Amino acid sequence: MRQRRRIAAYGLCRDDAGRILLVRAAEHDDIPGVWSLPGGGIGHGEAPLRAVVREFVEETGLSTEVLRLRDVVSDVAFLRRPDALMHTDRILYDVKVTGGELRPEIGGTSDLAAWIEPDQLAHLPLLPYLAGLLGLPVEREALPEAELTLDPHPTRRQRFAAYGVVTDPAGRYLLTRIAAGYPGAGTWHLPGGGTDFGELPTAGLLRELVEETAQVGRVTGLLDVTHYHNPRAMGPERRPMDWHTVRALYRVAVDRPTSPNVVEAAGGSTAEARWLDPAELGEVRLNEFAKAAIGRSAG
Image (cartoon, rainbow, N blue to C red; front, side, top):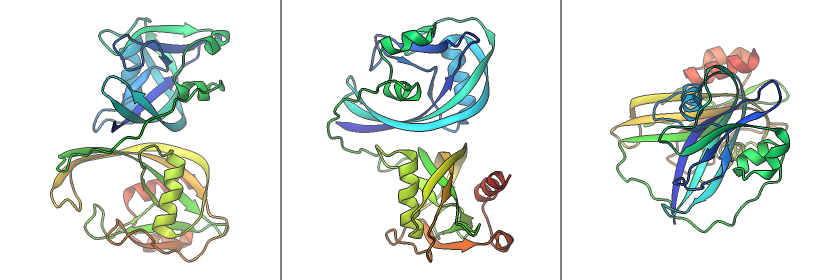
């Protein structure tokens, strides 16, 4: 078995009668006949908001407006045809229909789009993430072991990551300084990083928090999902790489702060970690992501 990963965006849409719009996987899909929210994979370099609007119209014929970010979840499924396990990071939005006419997808992975009555949902085969979202029982299948296969010389890469605006009871912010040899070297960043195969976004963030700062935290809320695309990122590969990161941003509280200490293996992307009072933030060189995230959390 092989491991595969993808990042996808979906839209939850209800009409005035409380019906929910779903799409059914086609016969040639890996899991035929199973229902899901309209949505799909985020293209390389594509913004998640743009992806959900594009996928929605492709699968349903309906144009939409994104109302709000609802949640970020992840799951692993057995893809029977390509003989692989697929880890999917799913970004879920609430959306509303603004135009178009309902129709099935043309030549895609779904074959039907329909408004479903609430009392019908429990009788349909639903993807586990959707059943969980709707508060229905979730059936999970036993998954075999899988080996991670990566291109040893990639020219581009898409990564899902989770970061935290981390604070303590005194209102200080926890920041990390990017090590030499990595994009943004020397600037101060938020704790966090790429999630592992099969790992939930929040679990990955708390793991990274320990590795980068030796702090134990708890996630208190989802702030935003952003993305970063650099077609010529220079990192430890020592050659340009077309790099696209989709980033979930959370609030994190550390109730019992200690002196930060980088505990990840030597040669990692974090050179230093530090607690800073709000008044001290102007004394360090924050990268744009950290600056915007702290501003958003404070606002």
